[in-house]
Image (cartoon, rainbow, N blue to C red; front, side, top):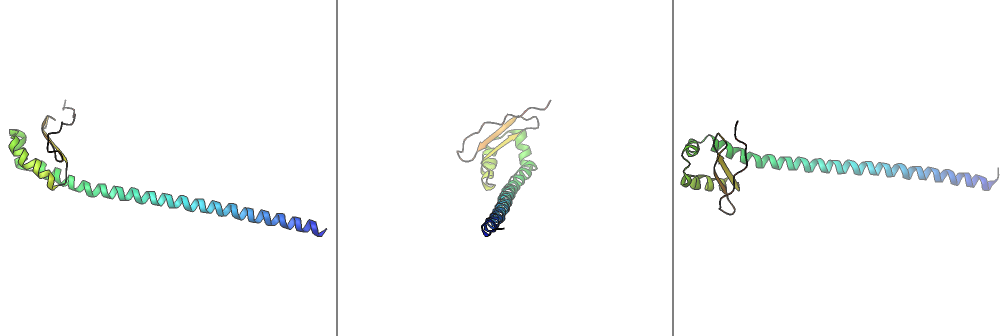
Amino acid sequence: MKLQIKFIIFGLLLLVFFGSAIFFYQRYQETSLFKLFNSTAEERIFSFDRILEIKGETLKSLAFDYTFWDEMVDFVKTKDRDWAEQNIKEGIKSFGVDTAWVYTEEFDCIYSTCNPQGGQCGCLPLEKKP
């Protein structure tokens, strides 16, 4: 076999070898990048869920405290707006809540307030019990 043919075959083998190496290296990099993006997305989702959980604890505490508060139960019966302005409107500020609605057991809205504007908010459209 001539030397030129040997060089051509050797060159082609080198080309195939390096082409394959580049191809597999590129696939490895794509896989690594995909794993990195997935882990970043998972971290963001976890962080978001944790923030919601922390914020939700405050709201859960507010709902629990106000639901079992005897004076709140009395307010639902009496619908005393002065009491609501003093206790609910001012109370939600300490919990970092912007809006509060109070409903009866029959889902009748008896009070609503918005903290930022200090005005009245519309009630949520809840379906009444059958």
